[in-house]
Image (cartoon, rainbow, N blue to C red; front, side, top):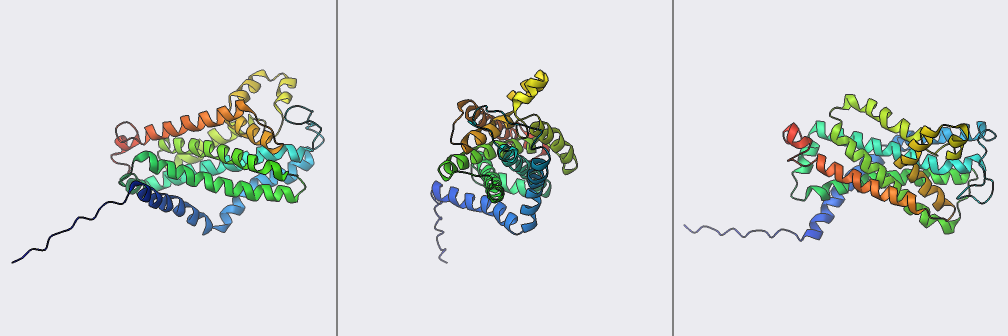
Length: 281
């Protein structure tokens, strides 16, 4: 009896393998988002409420002095736009973290992390998916702000988009890191409140930092200066007027790398929650 020989199938080249994984991970997140059109609306309700209501109510309260990056007085709604873009990215970063915790409880993370690819690539693709969703929502909000009279010079738009993408990546990496340590969905709401609201309110998102200095709140001023979200907002604020701030860009890139490395460490089966949870189930 003649036994047919089995011809082994060659593994695809690494770039092809990476492209397939990228399409699977990022495509899954984008498809989930596009199948839920109300998710975009709910993500924009909060910043639009701040933009429409607070810009009208506080326009004469928060006078914006001529300080960098501005060379003239501006309307309060124009000042708010970078901060509200940061709000969109911050909340979406936390939403991505919630998605990771949910996938872990449902067992999806176990399947993902046992794929025949380096763990770093898989987490990088999850990070890219979160960044894409944030930038998509930020672009929609920017278009609405434009319709309400906030001018964005077309020559400054490429730099602003890069700043938006970098800020969104940093905040998505923060969410990825937090997903390591949030063990259950029930604990997530408390974690969001503990992270989101201090980061947002102790920043120049809604009022310039010199207001804190003027009021004598030095400890709040120093906290705001050490807040990574502050520098994400400032990078977008400078980019919106065609300027560059090396300090803010350095903090955004540096913190993004630190958060992602911390997430990698947490998802390491030898050290992180995967070892503790017995395989990520």
